[in-house]
Amino acid sequence: MKRIIFLILLITMLSLVSAKDYYGAELRTKSAYTYGRFDVCYKASPASGQLSTFFTYHELGSEGIDEWNEIDIEIMGRFDDNIQFNTITPGQNNHVRNQRVNFDPSAGFHHYAIEWTPDYVAWFVDSLEVYRQTDSHISTLTEAQKMMMNIWQPVYEDWVGTFDEKCLPQFAYYDWTQYSSYTPGEGNYGTDNNFTVEWHDDFDDFNSNRWAKATHTWNGNNSDFIPQNVVFQDGHMILCLTDKENPGYVDNNNPFIKNARFIQNKINLKFSEEVHQGAASQISTYALSGQPGSLVSVQLINTRTAELETENICPDSTYTIVASGVEDLFQNKNMVTSRQIIMPSEQKFPLFINVGGKQELQYQTDAKWKDNYYGRIGGTVYSTSGEIANTQEDKIFHTFINGAVEYKIAVPNGEYDIILMMMENYFDQSGKRIFDVAIENQLVIDSLDLFKKVGKNTAFNCEARSIKIEDGIIDIHFSEIKDFAVLNGIKIFQNSTEIKDRSINQPHFKLYQNYPNPFNSRTTINFEISKQGVYDLSIYNGLGQRVDRIFYKNLKPGKHQYQWQSNLSSGIYYYRLEEISNYKKFSQNKKMILIK
Image (cartoon, rainbow, N blue to C red):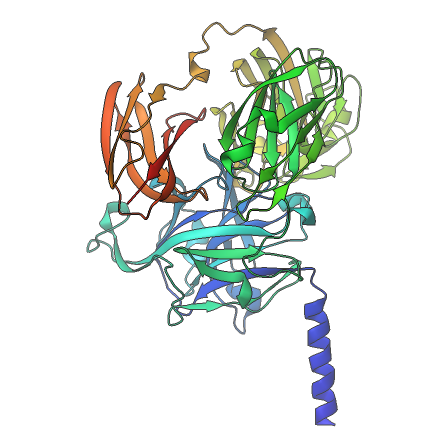
């Protein structure tokens, strides 16, 4: 009888495992830590519908969720300028923050860190503190937690976006990680030197004394974690999200055009994965189907994004972009890939959008940015009813998105007045829902508490005047302080279609070719900058992986010269100068050849 029961249990467990659609991966420390600083450098996986993470977690004991302790950095592939921070406290209570950044987390390696003390939890991006929590829930984070990194495919589409299995496999690359203990007044690292570095791991190989590869899953996760999908290769720890037929760090699929959007006479084209510069940087690779119009030039924005300059395009026409011979990092080559271009419809201003709802009055139906020239990224649609104070447009306030993260609208360059419509329909007291609102990287409302501002079930309009748009897109971002941001409607009024000063939309530097080139061990890199700011000069290999950083610092205008001494092996490398002072980030790349 015991054997029969055991077999039934085994079959049940196997059936549960086989019910998952994909394989994911997780690496976790064997030791758990109470307080400290946790650092990592990684490049996130890029596809919508999945995420790659760095976090600390207390494995639950007899008290279940009543002892939940967790601190998260979660990077969802649906966003190209956003990172989510979270603390999860006893009772599985979430304290979420969506943090805007001035880079695409899946386009390159960046340094992230968490500081956890009895008084605060703070998050850092590229050595700068960007957010801190100090409220009473921090005092409940007392359980020892393990460091963890994983990649997985959640069932929660409103959170991570729509998943397309054609984008598999997905990879997240981790360059190094580090743990520092909390030693206030006695440390050598972190804020006020209150932390002491205990260990650092460059992931040159798998340290089985420190790390364990996970073999579990949970409800809400469409993937099983398997050891085979944790790979150590070329100085990186690589987490893999795969189908069940091709586990591990393997890619047998050709790259394809995932998205193409027409903005300001240019086609922004995104590939499904990283591609080699080769064919992707040649205008002859691309063809435009549709009349009138033609392609003029191509520029690679990063290893997954190309920008095609066009002429004589008619916004009212239908176009398809075709690419051929583009090769991914695994040397898979797609001979032909095509995608219909998202074109802006003929826009009439003022433009009103019923966020979360259908066409009502003079308001347009809400949409998702993925499929339209305007729309939301993130958030869940809800509806309410009843009479709304301070408005005659009750129907617009009856629908909304909760957990608003981003809203984008493609518009002609110019100057606009923008009104965001919001209402508190849930909380009955102040201090329960607080969030920030930024438009075009300008903070237009700081710590908005709707109930405190106007009360419950009362319309509130956030007005932003004379907003200049120079990249063809109005970017609206929401960042939570307590609970989730809400949005009911948007009104856009066009003031002007002319921008006199376009210098903000131009790079403030010029990068020159290194000399000598080819070179043996040492070469000189020259560049000239016209505006003081923070610049990053780094070296990348042919896979787009950073192999050396020459500097990351504030520079004054003028001519600059740096010598790079290489200890790398012979091959083709790229040096990239990035201006990172503003949200309008620019970079230039040059190829060089090292011969030893």
